[in-house]
View (spheres, rainbow, N blue to C red):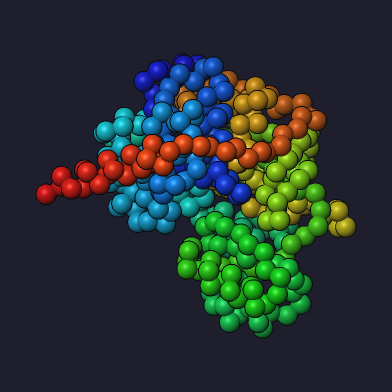
Length: 358
């Protein structure tokens, strides 16, 4: 198992660490916690005030990246520029909206020496939220009641729905609506940000489980383990969790990943409906979760393994951690002078480069 050399440069997206944090800072923290990781970490931000852009203890450099949802040509130009000028060797996408774009660009980036451990376009599309029920049906897993809509006017005729409901964007984002008027407002907001379709989902009561890991070979999970949520935000995001030994959840997750022939990091979310003694597939995220540094704390270096696998290396088998180990997410204040912001300096570099372009 070759060590990652000191010249290896890993780029990470998704650095916003606010109330609903992106995973990027946690991914960087997991790499820093691994003594075998000897490389440099470059943070990619889409806004100069993204909180992770101020974490200079985690990131060696900060650079601007296109906004989520920007066209592929812009992403390709920017990433190839960073390959040439910042020397990035591997990119770990940590936003749901980055995954489809980078899955399509991965072969072209690899030809230029920039590696990404990405699934096929078919696999990405199969786990889109509006296709999830069909994927679950093929594997024999239930899903919550979900409506796939293309017009806000479709909300009012929906019969038999109990409020509140979740309003979900096509690629990312989730908000809770407490009545039909709020649902229509949030529908339009989601459509403006993420396009169509927009999903409405009936919340379920029960115990939620998360399975995470990375697939180096299609459909074969590596370093996978399961966490039970013990505390969540209003939108169901995990604030605290505990490791569990749950063979059934692991089996369901493996079957889904095998069906997808998934490659790359993953987070699979299930809910156990206590009333029906049934498991529901909630979503499959093509990235590490926003608490992934917990894996490094457990001595499970699956983030570093993802970098090795992206570079074509081998990784040893990883045993899941014992049950009963707990994590709790906390907020971190980052202070500094605005003019010292690494992201602002990155913006200045981009502006200077554009001004030099004839």
